[in-house]
Image (cartoon, rainbow, N blue to C red; front, top):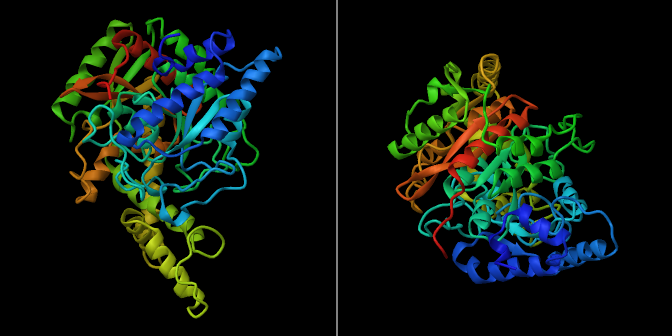
Length: 491
């Protein structure tokens, strides 16, 4: 058996199903890889060695008993630390939840366990998913395996870095404004945001409830589709869950892998035609468009005039919702508690706890959101932002009457050095310039590696109509079949 950590999830599952390797052997190989490289990458906040090996032994016992196994049985998966995992530390990258061990699994984790995958640990992230570089984690930044002096994207940089560093073949992220796709783009991995409501938010620590969407991270499009199929579908415990089955994303990915896009119409968004993007990113994007055309796709230009307002609208809507959601972290019921000396009032304890428990970016967004929701300003800011959201949705609806999917660069720039944008929040927010409109609309989108710029990965974003997730997988797989996958320098 060659190095199992370098295999795709599909290949690993086939080994386990065929008895060529046990799930325990596969899991131990990845645990050894984490031990060897994660002191430099810092993709994980917690490695659940005992839990992972126990899950792997269960898979081996089921195979030995002749029980049917799922398509990803025995495959290790890393989980972003924003999803509750029973008995395992779940911090959302924040000191205010340090050492908190939830008493229940999120629906996503429950489905991972039921499918026979092996949750191997919790990955690093920007605190409460607020950030674009994983530099806002309270536990230190994660490094990009392509260049350890650069960021791995955010907020889910830990999940993307774990895959790129071969610490896990699969990972789960969450995408509020690009937090799966943007890390995927800058680490040379695949990151997919499903249709909002297509994956359950039950047990997802909320940042912005109308935007948060859990989704798959992988090294290949087919692997991402297989993971999407495992975690997707209706969940009665989530009131925003769509009561429809997941489209056949696996079949779509396999169809796309044949390299035939005859009859598929791709829309290039006029408003994304280079503003703020690096020349190398634009060059890789143009090359990808040419490749897709050679595969039979028809490419047309589509105008979405309200996309230019997506960034400011998002940074009113998301902070407003976070201001409400994070009010629950008060030091009273669970998590950090500061100053409870029997003398200070409840209000003083809450204030001290939140002051010490929350980091600077979380405080910035809470303050912005509280202001936008305050009396006398609600209609002028939050209300207006919601109107812009409606206009952006109309732009998407009109565009999808002309084309099957929309394409753009995933990010305006490649992975940037640590510290280069933390001093200017607006420059940091620009990392999500191309990804935010899809979150405001609620449709699915995927980032797939499409080339290199300055020796660093560039991602192509494919956006599809709501509940048409299969379309994006077909196009992504077709591009992957033409350009291949991208491997970072050896750690």
